[in-house]
Image 1: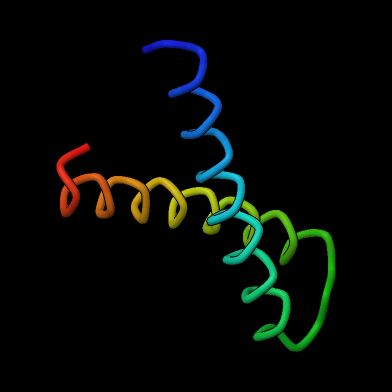
Image 2: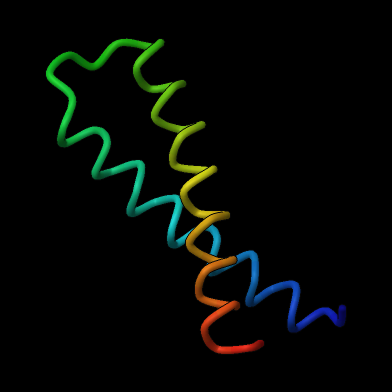
Length: 60
């Protein structure tokens, strides 16, 4: 993997993670450290799944 491809992949994962983490924060009722940690972890898994799904569909 060249440097540009790695940078694009990192940017895509960060964008997905940010969107999913913000969605999690909007949907929870109380914001405490445990909820934030769980939300960050779930958003990371979701970002990886979203990138994998997009790559499977576009064959890139």
